[in-house]
Image (cartoon, rainbow, N blue to C red; front, side, top):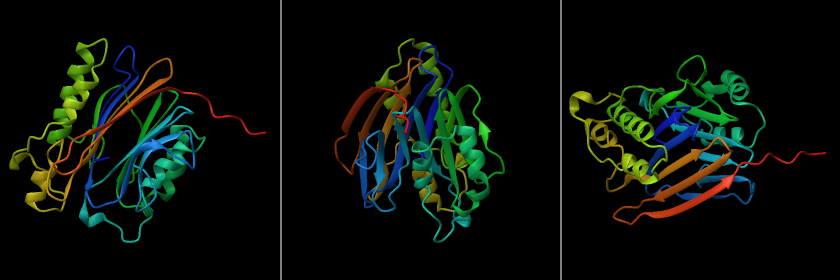
Length: 260
């Protein structure tokens, strides 16, 4: 993902409400959200080039999402795929804190990333661009291509919109969450971060929903997990000058079957 706006323990019905955009080159082969043949309990998109995923949920009650940390000076050649980290958590059995603690010593081998992991009400975050992982505190948060809650314009705008949605509605409007993600406004030059790309690209990437000839927002995804253990997922896919296609699914969380 390239933008994740989420409310954690901030709504009476949903302990986790998340709205996210994945931005990518249109030519990169991708399979949109689906139940994986290799693991029928795994619901996620798939990067057909590297084999991993950027975000997914598992019927065992696990959720994970990843964003890249944008700093061209820190990119590592021949680094392993960061998308594998999402799969490792979703298909594993460690708690969020255990998983991130175990990952910490080897995290430097990857190019910069942020990893958000959830299970049984515990939400934790780690970036290999800082020393320690953290448990996420209750509230409204935003994550783009820097650290958690770095005040980039689209992160701050998204957090304000999410706060309004969560605080004013007992029942969350999915359409309001997708409206949040559809904002195409560009930040002023004075607000732009400096991440090693050109000014033209910094402007383009400052929008919440990105559109250009070869690169843009490929999918927008809304995920909500309620206190009863039910997960709601809706995803809308985009292509250059194409219409959005929608995938909607609601399913109950169930425990993984125990092996003898």
